[in-house]
Amino acid sequence: MTRFLAGAAAALLLVTGAFFIWQGRAQATEVLQTPPPAVVIQPGQALASIPAAASDDPKNKEEKRFARADKDENVRFTLAELVEPRRKPFAKLDVNGGGKLSFEDGR
Image (cartoon, rainbow, N blue to C red; front, side, top):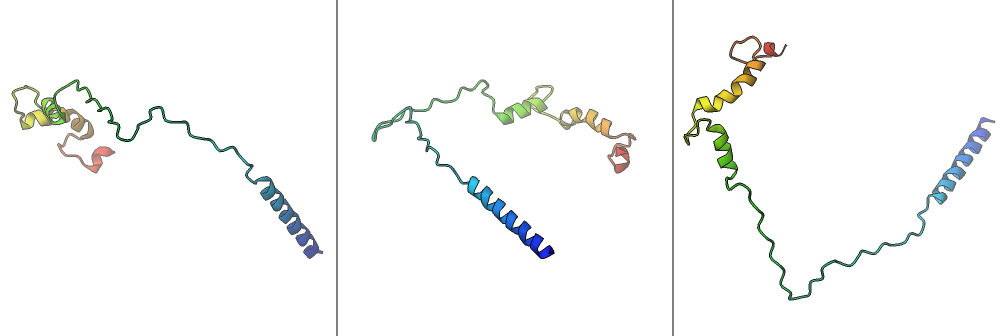
């Protein structure tokens, strides 16, 4: 009797699966065409040159970074000028005030 019920359940599952596969077939859809290009370039036609990007500041990255580090603007920076901006965040992390960071500071 169990074999009969198992066979009937398997047949029902097989029919249900076939039904879902049949329903899931892709419908014939309309193939979308790409629109024509806005600008048509003929063979041998010269392309317009791309204008240069406008620059709002003539300084490059290195000059800007140097200017941020040079606090007294004497075109030289010292170790104190480099270290000073980092003292406050370091003191915040150095809870015990030992001058060194350790795992005990994080607790």
